[in-house]
Image (cartoon, rainbow, N blue to C red; front, side, top):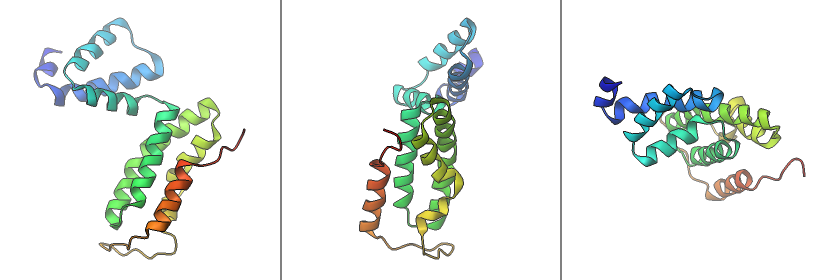
Length: 156
């Protein structure tokens, strides 16, 4: 433990993340709770909140994260950047789908499925060559953003 703490934030981050993930799934015994608290003291508060938000299967937070990511990906015009953004959205989408199944939330599951099933639908009717830049169509971007943020509930 002292050698981990001696390296500061870079060393404490992965251990804190691991302990948050374990805690969210099965809880921690007193010794691991003590370690988690020690690592937490080494991290800035903003990083702690970010790690907790990503480590915990939280339906609302995961749904918002996936929706924000989908909107951000639509604003991307470079093919390689788009592929990278969608790749980085797969884990939040997976967490969202797992939380949605646990809480029987069909909307969250469907939102996660957008990323997991087929992300190529965002560049409909457009051929994308390597290194190409897509033209911006602000009207279409706003329509998609509105659909994602104001989707109607399936069950009322």
